[in-house]
Amino acid sequence: MRCHEVDYELIGSEMQLVEVELDPNETVIAEAGAMTYMEEGIDFETRMGDGSDPDEGFMGKLFSAGKRVFTGESIFTTHFTNRGAGKRRVAFAAPYPGNIVPLDMAQYGERITCQKDAFLCAALGTKVSITFNRRIGSGLFGGEGFILQKLEGDGMAFIQAGGTVIEKKLNGETLRVDTGCLVGFTEGIDYDIQRAGNLKSMIFGGEGLFLATLRGTGTVWLQSLPFSRMADRIIANAPSHGGSDKGEGSVLGGLGRLIDGDR
Image 1 (cartoon, rainbow, N blue to C red):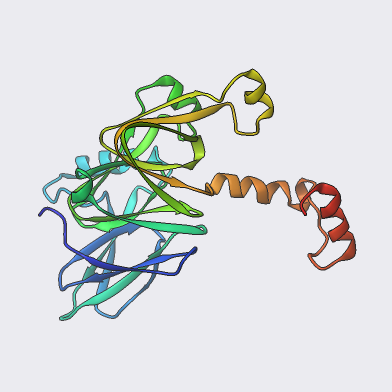
Image 2 (tube, helix red, strand yellow):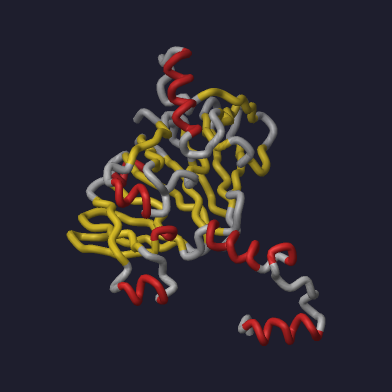
């Protein structure tokens, strides 16, 4: 086994965190700023790259870290190592409301492709890199652009998603989803986009101009509330953008929401 073998517990329901249990000298890597708490005996160090190749030279680490810039992530990851004599725990949380998906990479062909900001943490030895969408249409209109994250390894990895997470298993089938609702998929799944119905449906349907098309045999993870959708809703209702500045308990605020159709 290439990756460290870590145990874990998911805590919470809709705003989860994952508590990772480390044996002595075991290490978990995480996105910078994801740590919530850690027990005594755990040391942490910020490093360039994911540490999946211990023999990698400085230029290789610099190149690997530089690729993370394309995904909008920090060039650094934080490595948490148990230096104590017994088991110790460290916990990580997603930066927005949603769920954390635990992935035993060995059960999914040791490779998963996911949206560019999905990675939260993983056992040391997991390679976190990028992959380019080969189809121009998917890259331009697929919601995630040309660049996706690729996770490789045989240990535990954890990805984050907004709202409720749905796992779909396809067996030579086709699934069409909102482009922003795609979280990740395994090898054997072909990802493309297609028009959302006829011209009238595209303009007035409210589902966007394009849908993601997933076909093949494998596993797909979807999210019910993409962070971008939630952020757009918050911004649209902010007073500085024309939203109501009345309190939730005010009469005028309630009437305004009735008129606006919010209730």
